[in-house]
Length: 381
Image 1 (cartoon, helix red, strand yellow):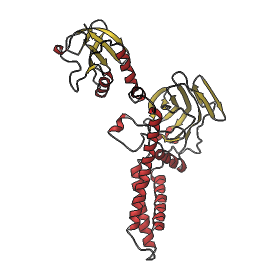
Image 2 (image 1 turned 90 degrees about the horizontal axis):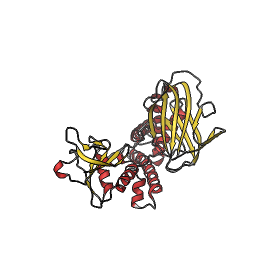
Image 3 (image 1 turned 30 degrees about the horizontal axis):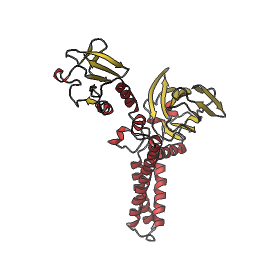
Image 4 (image 1 turned 30 degrees about the vertical axis):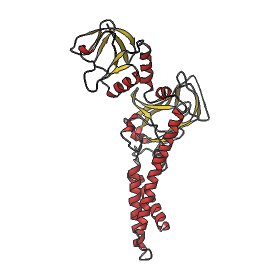
């Protein structure tokens, strides 16, 4: 039974690869032969304090808060002729992030966050990017980390269509992971944004083709092999294990990434390193401008999530935030000395000299205590 199961799955895998190559092969303009576009002195633009290109490898230092910009020039190429992008880094910092943008018609368009990890070896199907059509003049990749650091970009290249690269892109999708984000509390797609195929349809197709292969083997054997329901059951179990291993691999790597990010930190430090780190630091700055321990702070924002998190970060102050109600309470509930935190986006209008108000309501006299690009703190007079 085990031999029949293994043979059926191998035949099913061969048929699956044939289906992918025949029916899901990336289109091209038909011009051939096409050469890969690799990093050279002619095709590369770099913005960084220090960088050096030696034998196709780019040694790069990230500046300031840890930023480096690498642009691969691709003048005049037809996007559909290059359906695969390869990104490979050595010794990247643990918190390294990558953002990619396209240059078309002299303008930067369609910016994407490359969520997949690790960035040490990624094959990406470019047709999954919105705007990957027409003529692409350049691809810009912005590398960022919290601290200045050094790394080596071993490869940024574009490749024409081939069966081998299609398979490598699929395997890269299945073997990669993305760090946990807030949205994953409520949904899990099972694939990255730029994945060519979802794992479940791939594995289900493999299972069905393996069933077909087993049926064909039984029919062609002319009675030498008898049909047994044990074989389809074992095929189903094997495919379920394959799908589960893909999920377990991503889960364990997400756990390792989270451990690397948060291990050994205090509760406050974890908040400062978490997904709401920017908001947490901004609220910490606001709290430093509030001297009264029993102060009442009204949070005015039209962003439900930001409002809830801001109110939480304001504790132990008396934070007030109303869900799906006017952003500011009625005048009868306000008193002199109350603070109003206007957090963008918000319908509330804050003026540094006059005060704060909602549209079509009277102005509440207040003084500006703190102001930034995203929030304003006022104290009622």
